[in-house]
Length: 379
Image 1 (tube, helix red, strand yellow):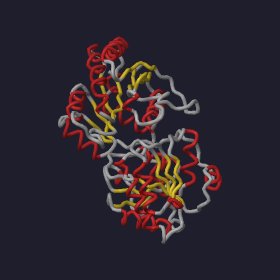
Image 2: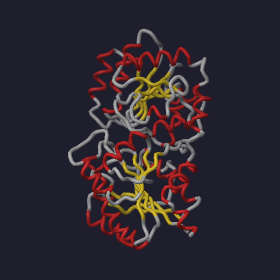
Image 3: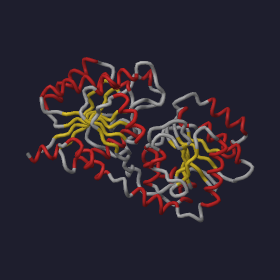
Image 4: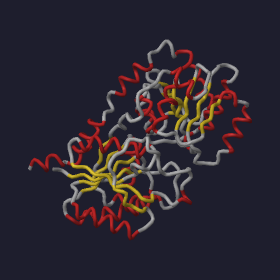
């Protein structure tokens, strides 16, 4: 039987990538012998901006081996040799940050010495949103050892070819996040969050500068005399929070904002999305966004900036609206148009049509097709 090892952030670690790997494991394990290797130390505490790197017991569990220390080269050697001995046909890495490139590169180099193992990288990003000196060099060193690539948007594919022009790759969609439970009635969700407004927007996820929350707050400031609505901000600050709090005060929009500045546990996510009429992704830069596929799971339209791969999923005036980045006026116009038309366009129906395209089974089949593993097995 074909053997696959996934190396990535995974349970019991928290966040969107861990959720992604959990769903990927379930889809792969239906057809292949699959195991998951994750980190015992993902980041040094000094470099981690959040409060905790693990999630509570309510998250759906998958079997994982907690082996990797991201900053210990001797550990990388031990893990690489262990995987070499196991002889998986394929190692799948989830790659989003060059910080992990030396670790992943070492493990790949050693594992592939068995003459059996190939390596595939699923690229969320190739060039990081917040780029640092050395990022490109580290990424190139790792990618030299990789046989196949799956990119999550056309913009990531273009970045990949800049780093590795001869890359064997396929651009696939980001599958739907289906692990957050079913929607609940909007009234119940609003009560759970102690929100009384009937018109609601959601900004969800870790708060970093490139995600454009400041642009969205300025748009709220433009609309405060024209619309009655509430912006729900749900996520942990990974940057200095004071500049956003100061901006809310400066714009006089505190009555329009409900702030939940914490990591949202898996069991609570459904309340935030169920409470919202639409989700706003005002990113200044992007490749793709996992938030999009949570929106698809909850059948929520999206108001997004046309950057990276967001425009590949959001169809203007169909399952949401697209605006140019860094433009509070354009974003305000789109928000106003949405509320004017939300009862005239069946956005949820249109989102459902789009979300049906993004199944995990199809994703896995196309990814494995790239590697020719099934063809080699038949031989």
